[in-house]
Image 1 (tube, rainbow, N blue to C red):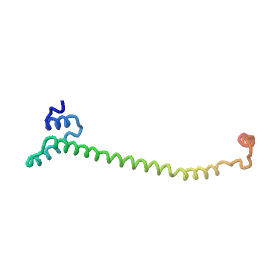
Image 2 (cartoon, rainbow, N blue to C red):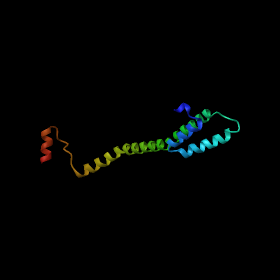
Image 3 (cartoon, rainbow, N blue to C red):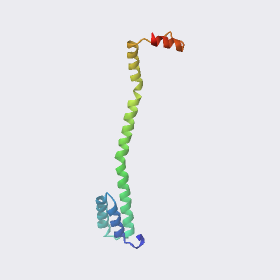
Image 4 (tube, one colour):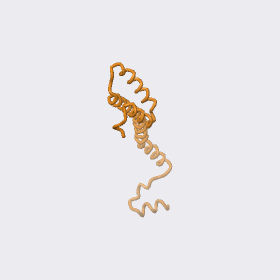
Length: 115
C-alpha cells in the first residue's frame, strides 16, 4: 500500500523501476543533502525528485525531435527537386525519341507506335 510507505521507500521504489535510476539517485542525494539542514518533509522531497525526473525525461526527447525535424527537411528538399529531374528527363526524351505531334486520335497514336 502506497499510503503506508515512507517518502524514502517511495523514492527507492521509483528508482528501482526506472532506467535512469542513477540520475534519480544523484538528484535525491543532492536534494536530501542540501535540505537536511533546513528540514523538508519527505512528501515535498519526493515531489521535487519526481518533478526533476519528469524534466530530465522531457529534455531527453529534444534530440529525437531535432532529428525528425532535420529528416523531414531533408526529404522535403529531395522531393522539391523533382521538377529539375523532370526537366532533365524531358530534354533527354526529346533527344532520343520523336513525339507524335500530329497525333490527334487514339488510332493516330496506335499507328505511330506500330509504325
